Amino acid sequence: MVNENELKVIEEISREKGLTQRDLSKKTQLSLGAVNVILKRLVKRGILKAADYSVTPKGFAAKAKHSYNYILKTVSLVKLVKGEIGKIVLEEYNRGQKKFVILGDDDLADIIELALKGFDYKRVTSVKAIEDKSALVLLSDKSSKSNGFRALNIAERLGESYWGVDL
Image (tube, rainbow, N blue to C red):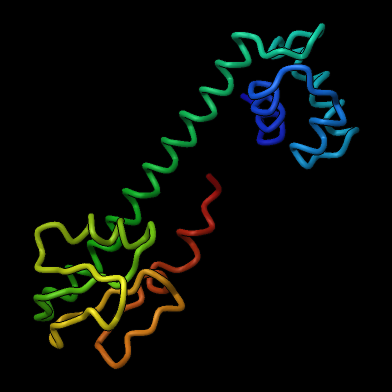
């Protein structure tokens, strides 16, 4: 398995042939010494060819495996967050809240929308677009303002434990 810095080097070499170690250092924002050590390590592991630092099939496989694992972690995180949002919405629904408004245009707003499938909701990007005064506004951004509407800040409710996950 390749680490993040090794992956940066592999990606740059994959994009452009004939890069010098100094070029790689600039493009990856790694020190020249770090690039040198990484290149030697990748050659030793058979991920790069020593002659021209081109990526070997093993190197492409390592890059693909890293991307696959990243996608799996991301999908798992989305499922986890969607489930937690679903619990929050269900609590409010059981308390009598039947209408919801999603306020936001970011990734968390997309996940909130997935969690609200089957509920009565509307999605808006501006508080001015909220028409139903009885709806609970679900905020996707910690800095969003609800301008007097009853609101839940989903980002705050989920807490840092979800956003600190190392993907």
